[in-house]
Length: 128
Image (cartoon, rainbow, N blue to C red):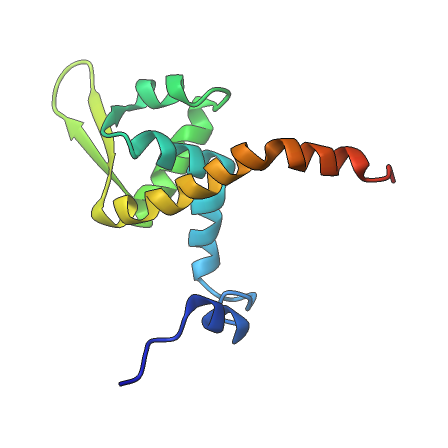
């Protein structure tokens, strides 16, 4: 029985490497600074917009809204608006988002644990 191709094989054949590949937009949304941090926070459960903004230091209201909108359009984030005054909107991960969150979190964790080595490498780079 034939096995489906591995992602590395697909990439080496140029689909993700091709300039016109539509999955590049998804890759950009998922791996953006704010996208990674949204996945990390929502992996712990449902949050309101203000809670997300409070947990993700430095994100502007505009950037958070854009990031959530893109991740919702990609099918990773679920937005639920409750018909109350004042508006009550909650964000959570969809099943697809829940599947992806551990991988994104693993990348972020790796960066955090390797950061001293990364800093050392940056310090060793000659100035241009």
